[in-house]
Image (cartoon, rainbow, N blue to C red):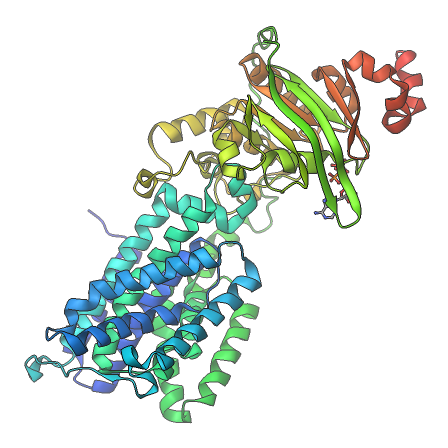
Length: 595
Ligand SMILES: Nc1ncnc2c1ncn2[C@@H]1O[C@H](COP(=O)(O)OP(=O)(O)OP(=O)(O)O)[C@@H](O)[C@H]1O
């Protein structure tokens, strides 16, 4: 078996780190490596919530402190080795992290960052003021290690090496499972993730727990190593900043980036501490480093280095835009089965205002099962808002939505997806950093713990995804990152993506918008073929020949209400529709047979 230079390099670095105390007796360097290990574990944990899930936390240091305190408090009362408390410290930290996840359930972006800082200060406040438990600002002194002094730092060092290895295994495991894919989907576009079935609250909660588990354990070992914990030392924001810096420097979302970052930042921090007096100098150093990183190396070291060969290869080429689709000759779709006469979707009195603007104003219409129903209307008449309300990515002010006899307007988007609702967006919203195939396997059925161990892309699901990509003509592009595909190609992949959950009703928002005539034709025949296969469509589109040739019935929206409905022929002749949307020229053209 031949090992790649990358594997050999990692093996050598791992061996050097593991046996570092054997390489030098110098306690200064041993301490530096021990602290680097603590920060590497913390950054690897943060990677789960920040790198994979996209939530930047400045409270990660709190979990180190919580772990250290759990160990310190228990050591005061039970006379056993403090190492015994390490697993429990991890569980407590994970439980607190999940609690934080619950509280921050609805916050994103900067407000999430601020809440995590507030959380850190809150934990520090509790540690300072709950004196009966924590001994307040005086802190807790832990027992000195009782092992043979000849062993020196070995037990601490090895315990941290094991914890780092475990946290990397967890990180790797998460990334390759359906759970990890769900987290990446949340990072890339949380609203979109909801519409393809990803139950974001549950996923985020589990990610929070996972991100703190080994950090709490490392905190316990760290506290024992210091033999002293106090609120100032344990919950300073500098620790959290250093963890974030380590992650950003090494590379968010990569397996080894957090370790690399931690082993660079901690020695820099130690030098600043020793040579320049610590304290404010560290603040200055961290601030400057953060600015430089964001400006010069926003993706971090590992992703930048990994991207270099690819960039060299693609320099000067046009990328994938304009590449030919595999449009195989397909037999004409069989005739659609006769409509069942059943109503699949019913919206009643739907309303949504933005400030003083009534975007949707008492809108009611139905979509018969087995139909390709068109939803047309002038710009700003509320079509996309109606789609957002039906899909659940927006909450309405009133009205009801019924899918196959079940009221769904109070359900979250992922539950609607699980009930058989699929939607595409006016401007396609694929997960750009995933490949086309990963995008198609990203949709998730109801949450189950099995998703924590199922491979992200494998087995029957991967085969089905490939089949769907072939169906839309994108099979050859399965391994291309979605962000590199042309707009039309992305539309086709997005169609394949929603088909994977086998939806009964498909909402298409401008499927023919912004794509070339060949693709428009292709899109039309795919819709017909799927319709013949039993899928019902509700379709928003401005391309009138496309709508009139494909849809029956058609609903017309104007000023947020359903103005008219009927067959394409009835709609074209309806004077209210002509006046509000189609215009006299259109009527003239169509009656002259000019279309
Ligand atoms: N998030 C929002 N905040 C404020 N106003 C909004 C928002 N979304 C939509 N609107 C407004 O609501 C009205 C309806 O918009 P909507 O996008 O639903 O119309 P549409 O019929 O889909 O238009 P188009 O055909 O141009 O896509 C518009 O006046 C729009 O500016």
